[in-house]
Image (cartoon, rainbow, N blue to C red; front, top):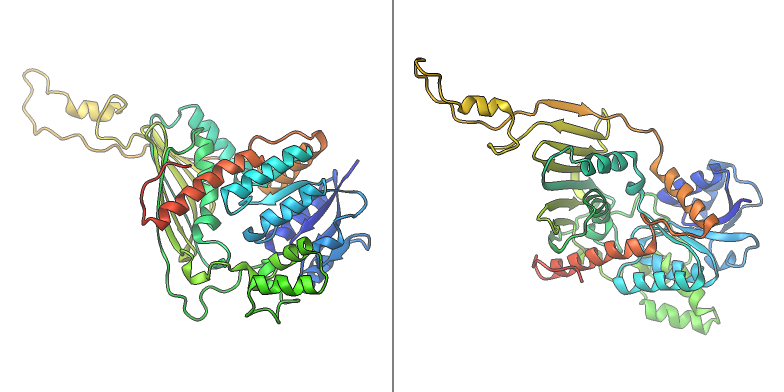
Amino acid sequence: MKIGIAVLGAGRWGVNLIRNFLEHPNSQVLAVVDPNRDSLAAVQKQFNLDASVILATDWSQVQALPGLQAVAIATPASTHYTLAAAALKQGYHVLAEKPLALNLTEAIELCQLAEKQQRQLFVDHTYLFHPAVDRGQRIIQQHQLGKLRYGYAQRTHFEPVRHDVDALWDLAIHDIAIFNTWLQQTPIEVRAIGTVFPKEEGIGKKEEGSSATDSVTDVTDVTDVSPREVGRRNRAEGINQEAAEIKNQFSPSLLTTNPAEKLADLVWVTLTYPDGFQAFIHLCWLNPDKQRRLTVVGSLGTLIFDEMSPETSLIVQRGNPNWGGEENNSFESALAKPAPTGATPTKRIAPQPTSLRHREVLSLEQVEPLRRVCDRFLNCVQTNTPCLTSSGAASVELIRILSTLSKSLELGGQPLIPF
């Protein structure tokens, strides 16, 4: 029996979810919700949707849809808590785009609500379903890199600039999730420093493909009105407050509770793990050099996950980039041996760092990570069992780290223990 699904948000990521659920044999897309009618029309045309698929501009229009079992949320981060809570209260399973919520309290509340309702809360941490992350985890767990020393990541691009979260909340969760998975640890200390750049004309445009930032319906008359005043007007008109709040959450004019100029555009993150391993992450959405690269350096080699690589996204560079030590190869040892008795003395050659001996481009399974996400979510719904990788509880730990990093950012980079 197919699982009936409503997709909330028809922007860039929502379209990918719609495509995957339409193609999956165990799901049936019953509705697509987006406040932007143009986005709905585009989805209808792109997928040639059957007339039975409801295209709605308001989530409240499909909340009681017969056959609906699950909701997929692909809306701006500031809307996730409200929408997920409403869906869980209605008894639906939920797939939510990352981050699950923008503060730890709300994330925990959603987990508790899912448990109370006996429903699955699944967070779309797509990278954890990437074949390169799977293969990289095996390489590290098999100790192929030797003793792990440090890691670093770059996640940068030139726009889109978000208006409901900063670069930290928009970008860091991916790399933190990968480091945690590869190391099988969580940080014991975190630190973040950031910079807010003055916004000039043409910089900081709306999110590309985002349903919320594309939306212009029902918001032109409230651009300069506070959310409190909008709520008062809605109540005066007799609109159900919960439905009104959800609808307002889709509106760009109400998303920016913190003005965009106060949101960090450039952030440097340091994560320290229990075994002393440190990871350094560079995050920026005003960088003309688009980077999606994560590296772990060990005593016997280096693992590189680079999505922008023209060859493959996963590379291992074998060799010991060390200045001596028990794991040094025989080349340095030979250089350090004394000359044989009677031999003509020669100038002693100081040991040099080893060159990387071998660069291995790894072949990977050709499968779309989001397809694996959707498949796992449907399986969790069918069996009503959580996915350890992407459960609400797993996401709470990532939000705990992000929340602490935000606090460190506020304190000018003070190292903090995740609370």
